[in-house]
Length: 240
Image (cartoon, rainbow, N blue to C red; front, side, top):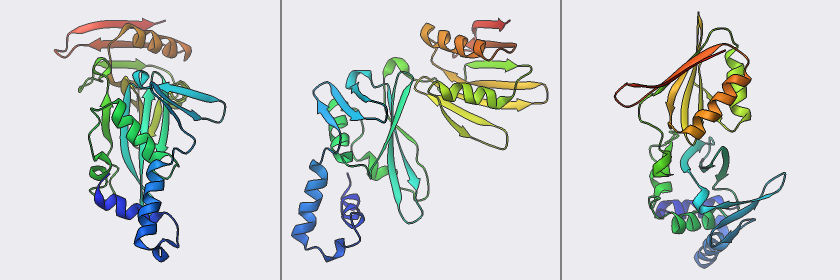
């Protein structure tokens, strides 16, 4: 964490922080750094109590980590999205154990850039969405390689289906949506003749099988195509 972030954190702790001595501030900072919160860290991963049950996430099972900043009006909140398979969990810096989580992640996945949180702070008021870690075999293509078209469907039905199966969804315009998970970045774009679902997808049999199941479950006619980086057709499918 950057020097300025450390100093700022001291003043975010409690409204009475300005009455603390310098020694007390240093002690408070050390306590923050060492506090594991509700995390249980182990050599091969960590556990954290979710609403339904405790779940252990192994370091080796992490596919992607994304850092970003939320504008909270009076201050900013730095967040982490951790992706594993079709599962995503978000942690923020106000959570007890945050600093231990950052430290353990850095130890387990040394390719995570140092001081990334300080860099994400600038420029102000910007989300600064940054991929901090990504498995080499699960990198989403830089250019779109997947194109699907539905002839008769409510675009929100597509959004809801993907959201229920682990995709993060975000409204990207009046009628457009973005759908993302660790192996895909998709767009939903309605038109006068139907709905286009397109974007970048890691071309892997497991991913294709998941897409087929989801699209078939919508019970609407569709067709899709996959292309390689040279725009050669790799796969096409129509349903029904």
